[in-house]
Image (cartoon, rainbow, N blue to C red):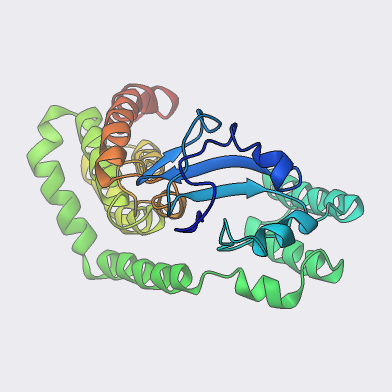
Length: 278
């Protein structure tokens, strides 16, 4: 960050010859007056409080840390590439996916075996493997799956399914499928894709039974609809991760995600019955 008494204030990156002063340090981005700059970096005049994203060697970082012109907020070392471990990791991942795709073993078994193999090969430590587990997602899934099972056993899914069939059944299975798809992509942007799929799958099966048609197109509607987490920053983990660093607003997700979801909605309504007939 540019300090209040920095000699760099009101000077551009090009004018002060930044790379020469700070030992070949490269300026990648600037957070300047609440906005993020990525293009005209060399011509931007620096002001107190500007935050610079830099790429530098370990020695250069030390020189920045000792400078009175810049305050080092944080630094991250680049991991050195281990070619042997990289090849073993890629081979393990390919084996996990390949065995599951060919139907040799279920994905749950191959995934767990792959994780154990990665630890055995020391590609990842047991501590890092444990930290990588997102317990919140696991407990949320446990709760939502239980809710889905409860809906199915208590007749809740059948009640919801019969209500949908009553209101939309006369319009044909394609319209009902379209409605299920729309409901799924709306819920997935509020709850999460896993939760929406687990909640609506038994309802979709019940609706298919009420219409006396194949369940596959309705399950495909839930599957694809639950993947459209584009409309909100909390719709999916990656949406949330880039929300603050990208300086986005909630409306930005709606502007891009809503037309995209509507386009997929139309395509799904047309294409799902073609590939998965009723």
